[in-house]
Length: 157
Image 1 (cartoon, helix red, strand yellow):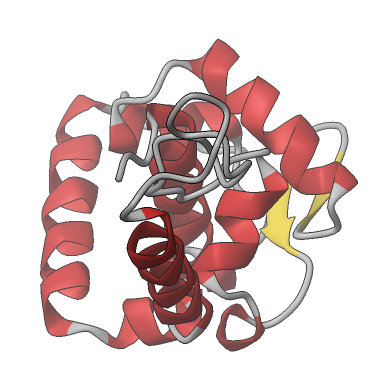
Image 2 (cartoon, rainbow, N blue to C red):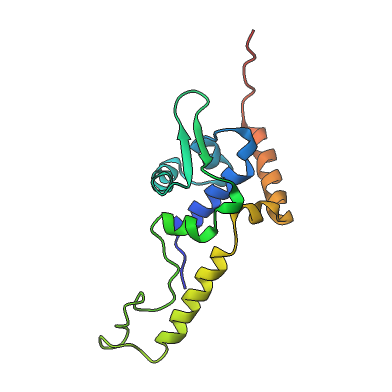
């Protein structure tokens, strides 16, 4: 089984949005800085996430992205699927042509595993991840590191 960088980064970025939901629209550059994901890659991912209705965007100053619905209503599997990813464990990609254009001996086993993984990821929402103590600890650490590198904002008179 292999989940590519695209799927991992999409889930990471969406979890970042969920963690910062109360902060209003979040810029991709903020996510990029906190998560160490290139801005251009995030732009590609968020284009797909927006088209699939998982995020809303706001243009202009103070703009950015927000989850389109409550984090508890967005399954990890939805995020992975939105960026055209599949968690597939068969060698043939589910086409049943694994061995000499025929189904191999273990095809059904790997198909069942793919199904179990999909069901597992459908059962975990971004909201459930936000509630995890380990996730909250990592987010707090990332926030602290980000604050160290941000220049102070100019105060308005």
